Image (cartoon, rainbow, N blue to C red; front, side, top):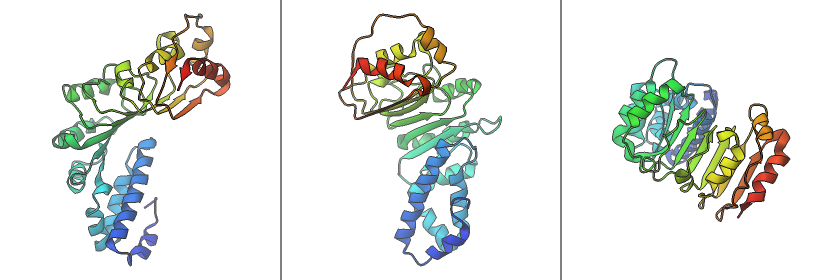
Length: 275
């Protein structure tokens, strides 16, 4: 594969099955993380699992008896591939990546096949989902309760009303773009990453501080703001009433990236935060 050249796999043939399984699991988790972080479309993990089966019959058998290698399911996979992952992952928690393959709503196939395993859904990643598709996705998932989903990642944006404490009662980790989660969701979180923070109500920092007021469990906070589209909003907004102090009693780590106006942002945020 492009991850590990096939010729190098042959040197591992002498290793016990248990060691091979651990190697496959480790590489699989690394490649799955790359899949979720990239925008290249097709899954590298799918290619890795396929290529392992071609190295040798033994590699194929070990790969098929390593459940963790199959616990990551991507909507880009074909129906047979998704069904195989659901079967070979056995009872392990499932990590679903939902994305668009051209004009085809492949995510519908993923939701249909994975529905009987909803109790195993642990994390969701929504990649490159256009505005027109979100209405369909919300309809497909309407009324469901994902009681065991603890982590959600959005690579573009989150539609209004999608994040709800009744739908995701166990959610603790959120990675989001252009959006500040509602206070009831914020109250559940232990980890929050916001990229390219949107200028909610014209004053993104004020709105963020207000929302953080309920984040009593938050341990890790990471915020990235980009200059340009939000720069003018922040500098031109009229002075407003000072928001109340935000107390984050559980906070362990905080990261703020605001590029050329970092000093102004940091001063406003840290002035009102305590932990």
